[in-house]
Image (cartoon, rainbow, N blue to C red):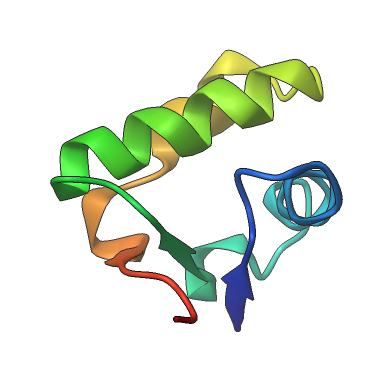
Length: 71
């Protein structure tokens, strides 16, 4: 599953729910950033706003990040 807008409000809420599901490892997140690490940091920052547990956040990997946007 590809999630766009995961660092926004609605996309972040969706991503937070997906991380609490059995299929979260199959998710890819399209995130803007100068590098994969920066993009992953942006995603984690957004998910903390939705009270996602730290152990779940630590399981997110750079292989789940696609750099870019819909432009």
